Every structure is written in structure tokens, then in C-alpha cells.
Amino acid sequence: MKIAFVGKGGSGKTTLASLFTAYLAGGGKPVLAIDADINQHLAVALGASEEEAIAWPTLGDNMGLIKDHLRGDNPRIADAASMIKTTPPGRGSRLVRPFEDNPIFEACFRDFGGVRLGVTGQFDEDDLGVACYHSKVGAAELLLNHMIDDAGEYVVMDMTAGADAFASGLFTRFDVTFLVCEPTVRSVGVYRQYADYARDFGVRLVVVGNKVTEDEDIDFLREEVGEALLGWMENSRHVRAAERGRARPIGELEAHNLATLCSMLATVDSEQRDWARYQRQGVEFHLRNARAWGSGRAGEDLTAQVDPEFVLGPALARQDA
View 1: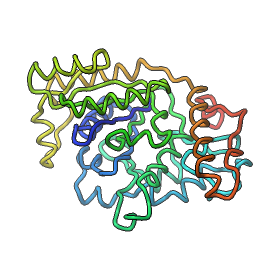
View 2 (view 1 turned 90 degrees about the vertical axis):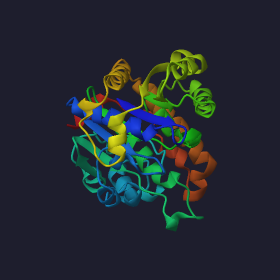
View 3 (view 1 turned 180 degrees about the vertical axis):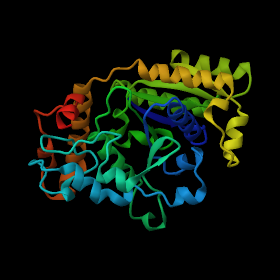
């Protein structure tokens, strides 16, 4: 299952993503995590030191390698340079499984605390005025477009804050999107934006309250988001200790907060992906991007990269194995 964490900046999105990732790993489940937030804090939230996080290799710096590997010998793609973030797989493309060994994972991911972790890379000084952050997140989008995760495998992504995730088709790549919502008007406003954007694409949007301190907070969230509210996280000494650099085992998290993580996992496990729709939506956003800017930039018709007879799915990975 592919899971995204979104929400207003400062809502605790990265904290929830790290807790859920640690909960999966603590339960012995295979989990691949990607930090796709412009503020790259997921590694530290999982217990890495600042020095380790700074030294982490990035997907954004390895876009050439990623494109070259995924292209394979797909005859519809002239060369790796002609691939854009939305380029869908087709016959001849190399598909990846989240826990296999391949050049992308060797270059861009590291194992930490039972998690295979990759980061898109920070928006740094060299990017100012000449690039947008989606040039880095595009590496993660391209990877997910070519990834086949099977039953019992989990891919977790910490997304950019606010409604920025809707600037590409990346928001359709997930089985469940958890929106972290504080009991505030501004945070609820971000939820409503997401709900409006996601509705037409069948995105499974689930709200998890955060920074809840009293019953009035719960009443407010229930009134504002209704049945979308799955549960909430209460103030946590466990989290505060982690924020001071003293990470604790996930089993020491407060009982109520552990129960919320359990409910989140049950929600994820109850979903079943429609692979045909998954492929169809990927193609739809590729065609949009190709027509809007991709073909003009590449100097060729990138809509021709679509293989109309190809559908991504677990059977392909098993055949490849």
C-alpha cells in the first residue's frame, strides 16, 4: 500500500508520518519511506542525527540515474532525457519493487531503524530563482509511477505542506492520504481544499487530528470534518523527547496515540488498489503535462510515450522475478 501524509504547515504532518512509519517497522512490516517535503525533516524525526540527515543521498541529485534505469528498453521513449516526472511505464520499461536491490535504491536510499528511507533533497541556494521544488519531487513521482508494491508492503511519503501536492499527479499515487489536522480554522481550511481537489479523482482522504488537548478540540474536529475524522493524537511526551533528539521505541508511545496508529493501519489494510484506474490516472496526468509544457520543452511529442496496451500490476513483477 502507498500512503501519503499531508496537511497545513506546522500541523505535525512529518511527526505523524514518522510515528506511523516507526509503527510499521516496529511491527516487523517492510516499509519504504520517502521525504518529499520541502523541509527535509523525516530522517531526523525517525531518529537520525542532523549530521546523518545532511549526508543522506537525494533522489533529486540522481534524476539522470533514475530516468536511465526506469527507461529500460521502452521503444516509446527516445532517451532518458526525454522522460518527465509523469512519464508512465510501458512495455520495455524497468519496473521496481520497493525492497529489491537495484541501482536507484543503492544510490538514493539507506536503511535506518528498519526503514528503507529516501529523501528528495532540499531546495537549496543554487535553486533560488531558477527552479521550483517540483523538479526534485518529480524524481519521487517518476519512481512511484514505475513501482509495484505487493500485499504486505508499505510505501509512506511525507508530502509538501498545504495544497501544493496537487500541482502534479503525485496525489493520485496513494491508496490512502492521511491529512493531519489541528483543531483550528486554518487547518480545517486546508482539509476542505484537499477534499474539494481530491473528490473527482477517487482519492481516499482520511483526517487524523493532532495537538489535541481537551474535549473541545475533539468536538471542533468532529463538527468541521465529520466522518472523515478517523482519530486524533494527544499531546505526547514521547514526541517531545524525540524532538529533543532522544528518540524512544515506538512501543513507549502513549496508549491512546498507539491506538490511533493502529486504526490508521487498519484503514490502510482495508483498501484494495484498482490497478487499472491507477494506470489510467497516471496516463491522464502525463498527457496533461506533455501538452502543457513537456512536449514543447523536449522538442518532441511526449504523448507518444503512452503505451495504450500496458497496465501496471503485481503480476508483472512476479513475471519479471
